[in-house]
Amino acid sequence: MDHYLELFSRHIQELGSTEGKREFLQIGRLAGQFPAAQNHRDGVVSEINVWCSNDYLGMGQHPLVLAATREALDEYGAGAGGSRNIGGTNRYHVLLERELADLHGKTDALLFTSGYTANDGALSVLAGRLGNCLVFSDEMNHASIIDGLRHSGAEKRIFRHNDTAHLEELISAADPDRPKMIVLESVYSMAGDVAPLAEIARIARNHGAMTFLDEVHAVGMYGPQGAGIAASQGLADEFTVIMGTLAKGFGTTGGYIAGPAELIDAVRGFSRSFIFTTALPPAVVAGALAAVRHLRSSDEERKRLTENARLMHRLLREHGIPFVSDESHIVSVFVGDDDLSKQISSVLLERHGAYVQAINAPSVRAGQEILRTAPGAVHDPSEVRKFVAALDEIWRELGLPRTPSPQQFT
Image (spheres, rainbow, N blue to C red):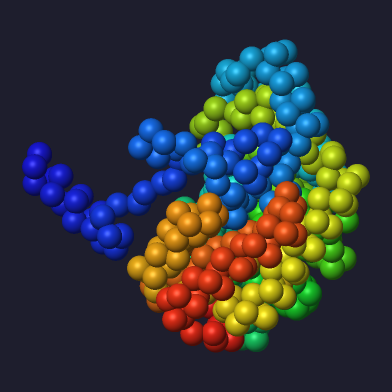
């Protein structure tokens, strides 16, 4: 047994962290006060301001969401009671699926317990059962996409990140009669850059390829009624399947796909990550439904998000602090060194009460470490200014270079 434990200890050391393992800040998000939160450490509780949450619009604490969650909890209890196939489908699951299909202008939608299982479960079926399918996947696609394609068994070609010329070169070399699928994200979670959707839609159309668009960092935040980047560009109809999450813009948890009924039925019937798991709790789904409905009628949260992101972009430029992309609300401050990024994160937390997670391998490649900052709709502009001032102070103390943003982050 000791031999086995030693083997795994060596694997943990490969993560590269100073203490050989990942450590997690214990955060208590304060409903009604977020981004204020409590940091629980060694029996001591301190108040912090969170700058790296995926609850971009603050819907996880919205009164309508909390009220809907409480009502469903009181009515149906804590859990779903089974898988969707066996006793776990509640009326809220059906209502939310209908709402999401309508949001994206698709005929059907399907809920999963997470965005990860949505990508994994949907792609394993769609690419795996298309028959001799050749998949073209962006090199920066999320791990869940990579796993879904691996589980599908489909042959794939990887095109350089957001490089439509490379995609066109690869797809033009393929058998024109062979089934094809292009898989990409609209907003990439680490760099915060946006895919050239119009060009990719054109390539797909010209080569008869099916498309699968991951919009997890866009739904709720962009487009009419929060339908995403493709909808904001008038391209939603160009993409066969839209994949999204309830855990970011909508503030709860879970994932989904929306698309033609035939494809959704196939995933519903064959996806292992859908069939063999307990359904989302009705209270969670009710909260998500309230969030989706609210954001379909309110632009206020999206407006505040955009204004705060633009303010941070401008201030970082003025101070010469490098960041990766200004195309979205994800503002990744570029550090490029593992130990240094952790040091900056620690100083921000200890001295300024500002929590932003240092991101290292494998989330990004070694040498491309970042502070993945997300100024949300719930932040006040004065807080954005204070946060950038803190970064500027740290940059000056550590003598860090005031360089332009990286030209390429891969």
